Image 1 (cartoon, rainbow, N blue to C red):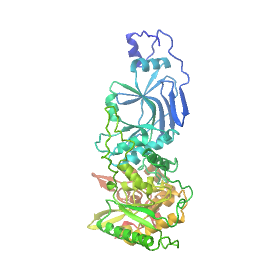
Image 2 (cartoon, helix red, strand yellow):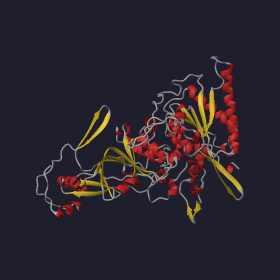
Image 3 (cartoon, rainbow, N blue to C red):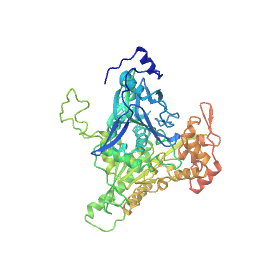
Length: 556
């Protein structure tokens, strides 16, 4: 390119996007700006312009956007465009718990030549190639939140811009500094091109420019705690996101793809298979709960062991399915110790030479999950892994208890919490501890009944995909019907906006059904302020009778 003689005032003029004159020929014409090609099944993006282009999908409330040539300087995303260029209206949420959108600033130029000189001769940005997925996450230390309030919703946004979700990409994560958050490694492996932490980029962008080939952002309303009227994990069924997320997680962590069962849970199984069942420890289990669970496990395993030892090769019809139950603490699932194998790193290794070859603890956990036929646990983080179960598996939610004392009387009701994860995962079947019995604690006979019911369902061949509503507990089904019959209420509790009290968006089906705290017709006091979320209490009480759910005052 020829040398360009630019007067001192030129830089100031361009920086402020004012009119200016260049005493030289135009640098290039604006032609063939973008080109997407496929070579050996790898997406290659060829960017032939420096102007920012924006494509958005979805309503402003639930929007994801693809930015091509998105600039970053001084902690700020920046759009560079020529005056008169088209930009769609965009409003994007990048964090599940931010009620307000993220909007890059915009800088306009009188012509493409002006923009090009600004980029090439003044800012000279560092290019970040290929696709980058941007999102924020507040609780990186908790794998449940890290996966399903951070990575999963961002991946759903990426699915909207197919086929980018099938190829390696990079993550730009708005996360805090954490010394022992191994979910960062999960992010990096899942993406394939690694992870950039935004606080690092911010330090490096002081007075320095970067340009991203492609950035996808806009995931804030796809989070697991972004309640949907159908009480499903957002995008799980609509975008097939549960399955895509599961399959990529296994693929990127080095597993052969799981068995695909298209029509029935019985495919690739026989009636004499031993169903591998894991009862996941849960902090909500009491000492008595664990005693009853252990007794149930012993009885079921004794039946299976007796059949194997005494009637080997017997093909007679079984009274019960053959089930082997293991009580599991996820924290105790560790990768094989390979420290005896000495691999010397060179000064130029960007990460350990064994990084792609030796499993970590999360891989060890996935290895167990992949082999589960029946997954059992209570509410909380343990439930988040059910999305990684194989086709035709069963998830049993034994529930927990909301309990408190009022006037020296103990009040309690059943709480399943993450049942929307089950309803948004159509390749598994969900079962629940009886809602009116759970307040009495977990009982051995009920656990045995549930586990054997799960085994029978699998070996009878339940149909796939499972109807989402069938995967909800009674209070979840009630919530869906409530949403169908009271549209105003439904919009109030499922549409996230800054003008609402967050307590009214922080809805659990069980709390609503039991008219607990903010759902009580009198509300409840928080920091001296009465919080009350309005809805049709008469309708709710009628539906409670329909679904045969006792109010907690009936459980005393």
